[in-house]
Length: 147
Image (cartoon, rainbow, N blue to C red; front, side, top):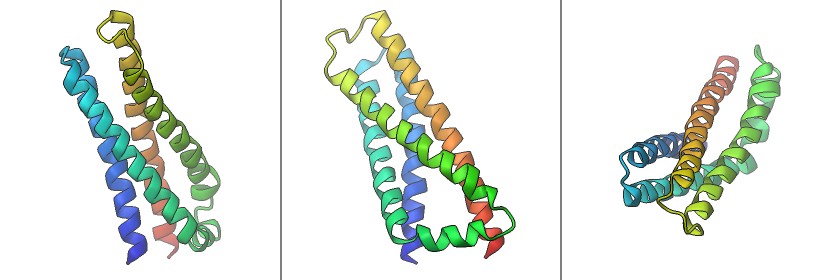
């Protein structure tokens, strides 16, 4: 029961971070800088919580689940999708952190080049978030079918 609670929180906050990045991108195009900053900060905290819960699951439960996936009908769910998902998630959390550092330590807040860079980062976070979610679905399928 604890395992599924941790996984639920991981997925919930991971998807929430993608939605918050989308809302932040929306406000960047509306030229509402303060709301963009607030939603991007919320995105960072959601992705950080997702990272913490994923790490907790990995330490406590993943070894037993890996065995079920690898020896089942879809071993590629681990060998390809889980491995790629783990590495992509590291890029996601680092990009989210970079976004916060860029916003906090820049003095170019309303210049066009700065906003373009922020938008590229936000679009990248959205694409990575969707990509990670799809890979998570495949890994979950590999686990569920083999149980």
